[in-house]
Length: 121
Image (tube, rainbow, N blue to C red; front, side, top):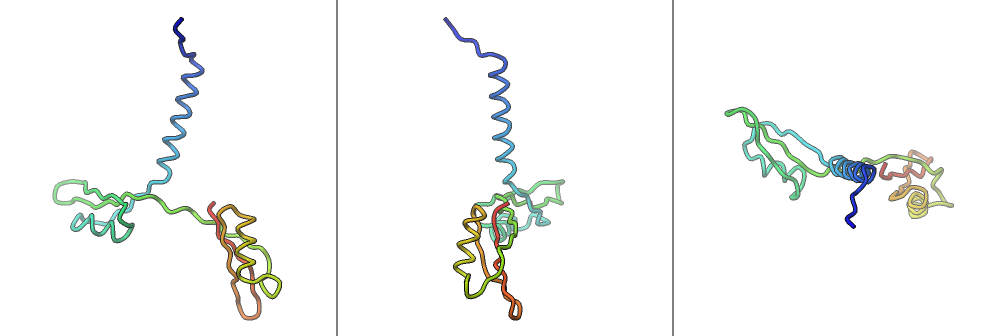
């Protein structure tokens, strides 16, 4: 007996596929660098060897566009004071524990030092 997929199954697969495609698109950035002269070299110098370059537009006015993976967005947080009880390594460890992928550093201004964290949003 042959199985015929239900409409609900097909719709579910379509939704999953669409969300995966949308996630992959979210990590792509474009950067316009003006006229196309030396486009590939300029793109790779600015965004690294894995970026792609393309030139498009009307004849005589071709514009250079770099296509590359967007860097992750970083958020900031704080975890109190740095000092004798919590040095640079302590701050970094506490930020890693509190924020997934987080890194911490002590930011000192005069005699006041705070533990600041950067982590992927």
